[in-house]
Length: 335
Image (cartoon, rainbow, N blue to C red; front, top):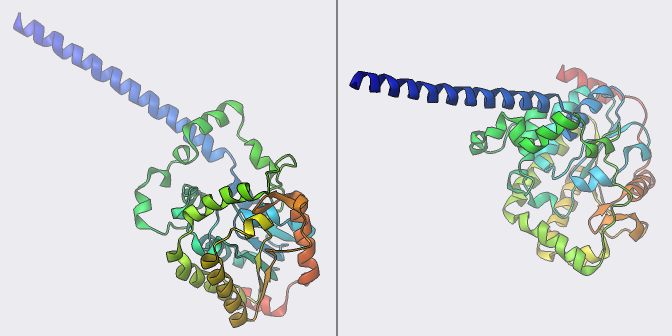
């Protein structure tokens, strides 16, 4: 009797283990399918990378920065062949890393616009509400993480966890392309929908600034200044003109900026520009930009993006055509 009960128990446990193994294998197979879907599905980073690679031999102007230039500076309204390599929440660390990666592949590059906004010198992407984007830069551009502890996160390897299982299921069932990414043009610029217009009053600006102040850190000023200088040195070494720009903000936003944050940042930009002999254009309080040019108190809309490009053409001038002899020698030295 005891042996038969033991056999029955063993058989029961075997059944449980088999069902558990089958369940785990089913989950693993399903997860593998979702990972494959997300590997094949384009995202804003892979789209911008592929489109820059497609015209790398033609690009003479590069635009760097975060959402202020991603939305707010239209490449096709600049002279020559400009490409917008800015992206949401992109910090100076990633501006530098992207430039270092692509610079040898941009033989005609003559000018780079570098965003230095109210936020730029005080933010790091790993300490930001959109910090998950650090894993996107790792997966799609191969840019190393800044902190070793971040390599312990499974999003280092998993695109499903990075973009969420829900997003992966949507891409599987509704198609690989995300509707928002379709607004990125062939020059890397994101066109803000015309219907996206937010209030520009003091209360709305205060709310936006409260979010911004929540991730601005004075402790990052020195390291971001050093990164900005490294970026300028890299570009000048390759005979690329550097123009620092602060994009327009609404008067309601500017009136509530903290002087103890903005004044050191502005002075740093002015000092760096003087040290390296480059232009720093501060459009923060730009009378040629109207209220109708804003999406919200700190971002331009599509009309504003075109108008800012036109102002740059006036204030900086058209980019020189072709490849300079100095640039050609610099490229040859890196090969």
